[in-house]
Image 1 (cartoon, rainbow, N blue to C red):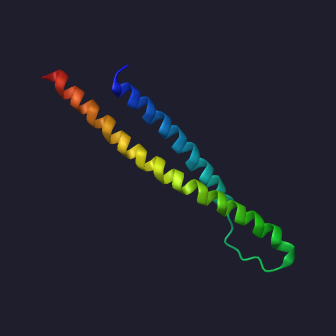
Image 2: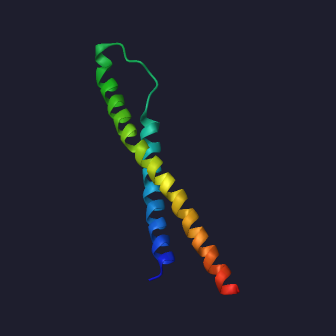
Image 3: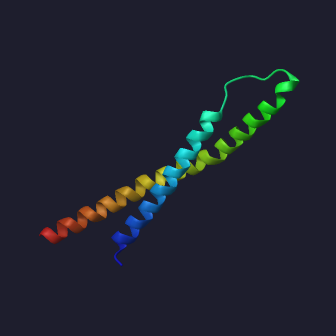
Length: 90
């Protein structure tokens, strides 16, 4: 197996995981409220929002790292593909 095929498969896996995380993060952000809960009866709502924020704070670094690795790997695969294409045409 050539390195280009292996890197392309890795790029596809990273892309799939990144898309899944972005969808999950957007569903979490849809549940997020911008309200301040003052009464005791609404304390369970505040707890839910705190849990959502905790999940969002765990996901955000993963999304950043996967996004950066996607860009770098896409540039590497594109460069390798271009290099291979230029060498076969000469």
